[in-house]
Every structure is written in structure tokens, then in C-alpha cells.
Length: 271
Ligand SMILES: Cc1cc2nc3c(=O)[nH]c(=O)nc-3n(C[C@H](O)[C@H](O)[C@H](O)COP(=O)(O)OP(=O)(O)OC[C@H]3O[C@@H](n4cnc5c(N)ncnc54)[C@H](O)[C@@H]3O)c2cc1C
Image 1 (cartoon, rainbow, N blue to C red):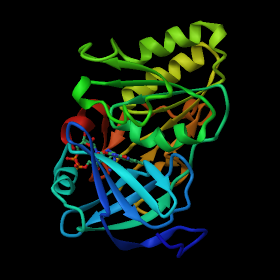
Image 2 (cartoon, rainbow, N blue to C red; image 1 turned 45 degrees about the vertical axis):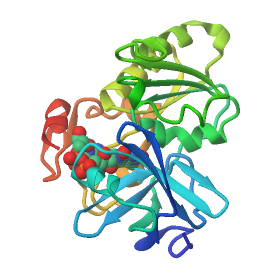
Image 3 (tube, rainbow, N blue to C red; image 1 turned 135 degrees about the vertical axis):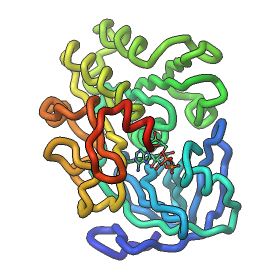
């Protein structure tokens, strides 16, 4: 994607052809596009399917003249793009948001399709420990991509890796001082990230979490993704421990498409 606006970001959707699609797991696909994108690990794109919707998607791969996002089909928009074929077009704008810092002695904890949001971070870090959790074996993505990395895999039903949650594996890791973890990066369901943050506080380790709130504009105008006094799409989506400590809404409430604030359980039921 060519640089158009501030830095190398474009605010006008560029209609780009899907150059390749890879099946990454049950209902999970990576959509590749030709073009150069300059972005930091943790930043996201706004992806527009005319007549359907426009949604945020993390940049999950980038290389020379190529980039991609990985989508999990869970609702109207993601089910519609799941049906697209090579050569079909999507409107892409961005990249948006803050990125992750890049620190050594890192542990990256991902839940579900949150793995897509930390994938370019993993590619950029020196030898991180990865803790990755999903519901079951069929929901796991990028196993081939990261076959040479240090990775602990957790599944809720025990169908692959260990049975249990990412938080179990993180607590064991942080307890063992020999692992010398200095920072934990995380993305996944907010309830998981809240527990990850609490463990980091308990073991006095820095944390950065990418909060995947409902977003509409992606550049700070609509206010739909407000969390306390922060606008998630421009102040985040990546927040540090210092910021997370100030956010009483983190892990508790979120805003619906209408802007109404509800508790997190209701948010997940209603969207
Ligand atoms: C910064 C950021 C990066 C993201 N990166 C990815 C990614 O790489 N891959 C991916 O599959 N998904 C990603 N998401 C979430 C993705 O935007 C939503 O899953 C998608 O919008 C669902 O749309 P839908 O119409 O298919 O489902 P809906 O029927 O609208 O919703 C289904 C579920 O998705 C949640 N959801 C809906 N819209 C959003 C939204 N805009 N932001 C967050 N959660 C939402 C709802 O709480 C609900 O539980 C990201 C979200 C954010 C904020």
C-alpha cells in the first residue's frame, strides 16, 4: 500500500485485490495483498467490504511488497469476507494505533485470534517465549509458521498441547525466576488479558496489552472505543501497565455499537 497521509498512513480506503488466501484454522483465513506497508507490530488496518461494514484487523504478516491480515469468521462482517476469493477487492486504510514496544526477555501470551495481533511482534522479538491458548486443536493458527519457536500451547479441551488456560502457563512461567521474564505482551479475550495483567502485577513484571474494543472510525473521531479517558484506537490499542492500572473499565465494561456502556458479558452477548 502506498504512503499517502501523515507518515505512511492512508486515511482513504485503497481498493486492493486479494493476492492470496491461506486457511489458518477453523473459520480462520489470512488475506494477502501486494504492496508495501510501513507499520509497527501491534498496529491495525481498517478493512472495508462495501455494502457490508468496515472493521479493524491487525496486520498479521508483512514482507517485501506484501502484507496480510488474519480473520476469524464470527459474525456478519467476518463471515462475508470469509466467502471472498483471490482477485476480489477490499478497501484498506491505515495503519492505525500504537504499537508494542520491542523489549527482550519477553513472554507473548495470545488467546484465540488475538494471536494474529501479536504475530508481527513475535517476528520482531529476539527469541520470545510464546504462550498460546485456543478452544481446541482445530482453532489453533500458525502452528507451521512458529514451529521453530519456544511455544507452550494450551487448549481448553486438551485436544492439543496442555489442557488448561494461558493464565495457568503464565503463572508457572513467572514463578520460575530462571525464566527471567521482564515483559509480558498479550492479546486475546479481555477477560484473559485482565488476568494476565493481574499476574504481571503480582510477579512485578511489566505488561503491554492490546485491547480489541468495538471500533468504528479507527482514528479517534467517533468515541465508540472509549475506555475511561482513553480512545482505544488512537491512544491504544496497546496499553502499558502504567496505563492499565488507571483503567477501571479494563476487564469490566465496554461500549456497544450505539456507544452505550455495558458490562463485558453483555457486550459479548449483544455484538
Ligand atoms: C485493534 C483491533 C484489531 C483486531 N484484529 C483482528 C484480527 O486480526 N482478526 C480478527 O479476526 N479480528 C480482529 N479484531 C476484531 C474484529 O474487528 C471483530 O472480530 C470483527 O469486527 C467482528 O465483526 P463481525 O461483524 O464478523 O462480528 P460481530 O457480529 O460484529 O461480533 C462478533 C463478536 O466480535 C466482537 N466485535 C465486534 N466488532 C468488534 C470490533 N470492531 N472490535 C472488537 N471486537 C468486536 C463482539 O464483541 C462479538 O463478540 C480486531 C479488533 C480490534 C479493535
